[in-house]
Image (tube, rainbow, N blue to C red; front, side, top):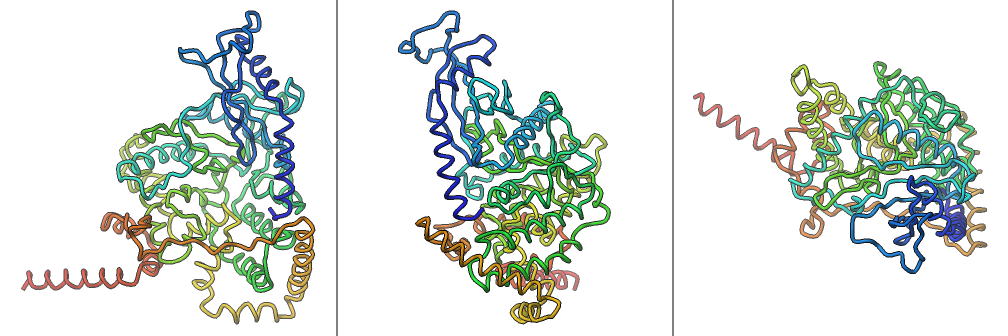
Length: 527
């Protein structure tokens, strides 16, 4: 989303929130409560990116036996709490589609899995209710979210405990398999879940539409996909759309040239990445926004609830990956060596947790754990090149980072500047040269719009990466690698060359020295 749209929507969101009457929120909750208990908002509303939540506390009085407002106090015995969640309508391009998708997904998850989610007490898709707004009335979840939890700094015991629980969630999601890529929605009565014709709505598509980029022309509302290759081609078209219609998708001419060239050059890489055996599914249900802030835990780091299922949809098998935040880094930093190696270490630990969990709880035939279906799938998906291409498709905003930091040189060699120059000098590429000129002209106009709004253009911050030489201040990655156990796990992968290439220079030489010493000792013993 461009800077100006974001600024204007922030103002609209503030107006929208100020227009909500907390008294009506309570009146709505009382109306929905089976015993019609009175209630009050017991703390400040909690604002997220796409919703605002009002915490509701019910009293022991009812509409037929009311108590004056000034006598409503929190009782000593256990109390009943709800959360009334209202979508931030200015922040949503498709509010009804988003809400139907979330409600239907929650109904499905509650019916088919044991994944902990909030209980749903009531909802309205439209404004036909006391509040005059769409809403969800949910169970209030106690505890804290994982937001701010530095996973690499957790003790080995806590980290393993967290990974084991995430592994269970992923194992259950993997078992929800479908014949096409799409999303849940509600039936014509807005009561039961169906999985038929809803597109895989994403945050990126929502933001493109709000920015006037017409992403729905590329992925219309009823569009589903029966093949991986069609789906990833659509993602690439949305990335092209960001370049052509995004008002601040680039910040100078060099950036624009590299961005456009990178999209063209990556098309063949992505098409090669798609495996024929997986092209037509099955497709796996996945939470579309599994950030730490959407995972509630108690004081012992037990996961008590997963919230915000509004962007959930089915995905190709090749995109079945653990959440990248378990590594302590997002993709821009993780795609820079040697942090690529450290990133792989943490996803390998997650893979190990899945393997142990699948072996213990999902292995009735007592197969060797290394050949269990989900273990084999993750082993293939988490190969370095496969993994980062999949992450880039899951998070298109980082697509350029993955391409330029990891893929360009590996696929096309070191002559980056010459290749980009040659690309735009070809007669065949005159349309792309014209697109560049148009983009730069629109960027100039956009900067004028920003100035009129009193805003300074925001250029991308440098990619933050931990400094390996300063271990006491930032021991996130290399200081937490568990030596041979992690290296052994990585060595199960077939792309050892990419792993070795991402290591600090002393590690390969140390491994070579150890190997040579071992050979000498063995030779001496034989002699």
